[in-house]
Amino acid sequence: MKTFAELNFPGRLIAVEGLDGSGKSTQIYLLKRWLEAEGIKVYFSEWNSSELVKSATSKGKKRELLTPTTFSLIHATDFADRYERHLLPLLRAGYVVLCDRYVFTAFARDVVRGCPPEWVRGNYSFAAQPDLTFFFKADLEVSLNRILEGRPKLKFFEAGMDLRLSSDPYESFRIFQGRILEQYMAMSAEFHFVVMDANQGVETQQTGVRKLVSERIDLERFRRSSPLPLPPPMQRANKAEETEEDSAA
Amino acid sequence: MKVDVVKPNAGRSNHRRFYGHGIPRVKLEDLAGKLIVVEGADGSGRSTQIARLVDWLETSGHATVQVGLKRSTLVSAELDKAQEGNILSRTTLSLFYATDFADQLENIILPALKAGFIVLSDRYIYTLMVRDMVRGMDEAWLKNLYGIALEPDAVFYLEVGAEELVQRNLSKKAALDYWESGMDLGLSRDMFDSFLKYQTAMQVAFRQLRKNYGFTVVDGNRPVSSITKELRKKIRALLVDK
Image (cartoon, rainbow over all chains, first blue to last red; front, side, top):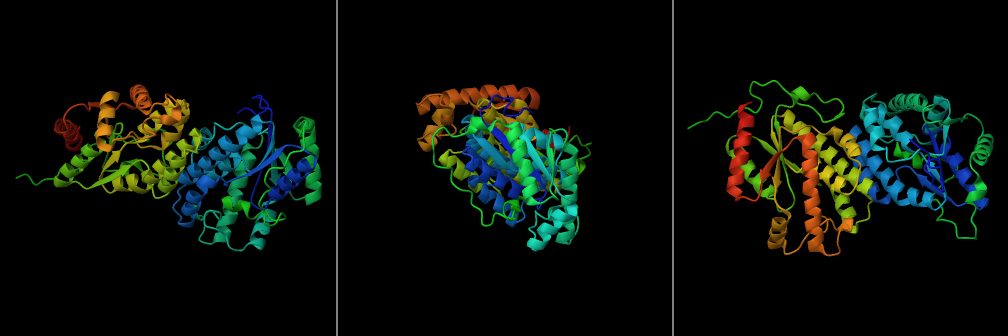
């Protein structure tokens, strides 16, 4: 798996990964705000957001029609749509693309659901490796509490109820997230994750993120040459919460 | 009058397998029914033959189920919509079709086989793979993707020359289908011309795929009834036992 830099793309891709409630969405949002303010050409893309695939995904989830295989494939379809229609052209055009979750989410989650790891990885093999991947590692209890306090009603697939781990959604969610964390940690070295301590304060983490991004990526190259209108703003109800986009779980 | 219905799995050890990684937690030995696939282009006579086979099988006392591309509860409507606008790129469309296939495999094909039904599939993964191969997609990637598929008990590929397909399609609908003409490939702006080129390329790709997936090529240029006769004969052998 080669990075976009290794493939000679003019653009760069930065991904964030982590459990629901790890604070990764807040961090990537703040990174985006900083890059925009610096006049960098930046685009933000989140997991499970392709318009076209959305209706099938939500139908599958609402009616609990999804099996591990179709769950995996429909998310791969969503990713491919965003990858081919948005990410690739933007990376060709020299953008810094920020991804809230990338293929590693599928690698972790689908494998926990019982899909063969080689099959999942093969399906996503059209995707290049991010130039920088942050993994926000919070204590399992901290992540769980953030989610469980904020939104007591867990969705069926989000709680991993399809795995029949427990008839109690909260218990199921705990076991499910614990297993996903194990998968993430197992691939951390292989995919060169930059592991961030997500138990730290928001500002401390963001300082670390910005420092690393400016060290690893020559941001001057991505500055707009002329003042252009910014891409359409992200639609977020509340920037401090990361519950909405995590409904992908 | 003969009243005994031959059981599909009569006294035979099972050689069922998935092409690749398969579907998690499926017990292959439980799949007592038979999976029969009819492949071929639009106008090759697939639907006619399947209808005739269903008739014959049910009269003989076999329960049947039919599946085909773009018939899943999960994504068929969305796939239609995507194709109307021609807005999906290749990998995306490919994965979308795979989702449609997987949904039917898990929710219809496998349960029906478990219940001892004869499943007739109007096209299978081969059409999907061949379409993508013609569009330049990586064969190894496709092989992995469709490693979820169950190997059928029989695959009949109805081969009809491109010129004959044009005639049949025009006499049926007085028009050629955009996708069946491969218009998205930009082979020619002329639909007639594109259809011929595309269908010829599809046939070449089918023959290439045949090396690894071993299916029976059936000459589809013959009269309907003689094709049915051949198919019946082959299926009967399958049911009686090998």
